[in-house]
Image 1: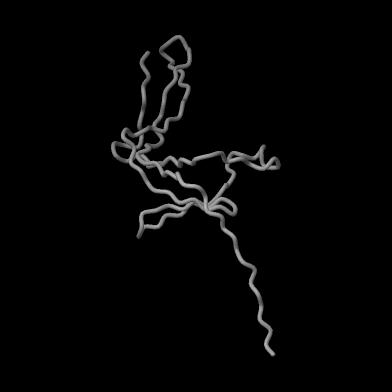
Image 2: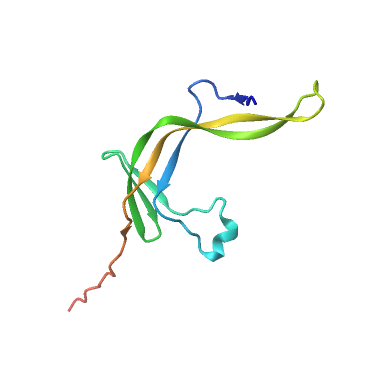
Length: 124
């Protein structure tokens, strides 16, 4: 079976995506289970001086690094197309919407972020 893939963005101009790889399970609270698409679970920051990444989820901070994939991956979107010249049976096409060349790997245990309560000094 032949699968045709179309790229409308031009050679070398596809948007870059990245994979975020975590060790463990990310679970949403029961009150958010029906709102998972578009749910913000944390903040991803990049330190350009060190080349490290930090991912903060609630009171936990993970440290990670960027790794180049051996083989790039394509991000595809499936589309049904009806060819008027054929017997009107829908044909599937795949559009390239991005390419993944890197992954950000968080392989260490998270560091707990504990903030100390500020003590106000009384002036006498």
